[in-house]
Image (cartoon, helix red, strand yellow):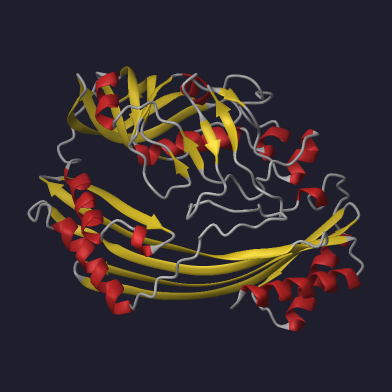
Length: 441
């Protein structure tokens, strides 16, 4: 389905909302297709196709709001969806903060960010890639890698249009592709699993299937032979794939919903230190082929590059128009989330960070959701590797790491250059000066 078709449907929806008496409205219309092929133990396990379409509409009757959605884009369904939203609005409480984002903030220039690169891959070719990936993982150690959770090849193509009563009506196509693999290894009675993946907007930017499989196999094998460690206070190094979760915690704490509900450990932190002086975070929405690139947010507000954290000091919040009004501020163009966060490294390679840590814990997996957003208290199950004198000596499991996120951010002493490409949060491994590590001795 073409963008122009979706834009016309969006225009029709807004006309129906106006006829129904709505003072303003916005709508999003989308269409997408996808293919997912999975292989396990050399045999095809699943071949999945998806074809999704949908429309959502929000109507405003002054301070009353109603929302409805449908997967049917026929004229009758559009009419019924708008009527449903209008009926809901009649029964909602008045909210003076609801409404469209300000008209003067709408994106007037929508650059092509090269987000759409369809992958014309046949099922047979996808199967061959998945088999190559899994075989590479199992070949790492044919004796100890005894089972597999499979390899997947996924491709998705979509397009959407967003329109509102300010006259904004725009959208763009986008694609996402990935290859992943997970295998299981045994040594005695012990079993371990690990995985690896690659994702990109364009298939040519994916890592090779052989590399993904081999890396998954190597990561799995290295987890065998776990030994106990002593409970204590140690430096903790979060591996790059996990380091983004620390940044996500910070973003959640400075997001409008947490702030106006007063459920954040970083209340009233604008212009104050929220991290170590070496912490610098930039938001760059217009990165070509970026995983989270967008010329406008989900309210049509133009996005702009900016510093979120500079030298450890918070430069701005993450706000939609609603949360901004609740806080007496202006939207930051983040309705729907942040766009491509770049965390500046401290020019330390991964090996440099191990040496800087000396003796401590390298975390490669965390379990559970152990962050209290109000207090910042952090406690999660973890697995990884024990490091002595800057050298990995053995794997560890069934441990708990604990601290306070506010203090953890202030205790960052190193950020690696080992960035995972094509991520929405581009950060290398992050070294925390000290956390509590609890383990059975």
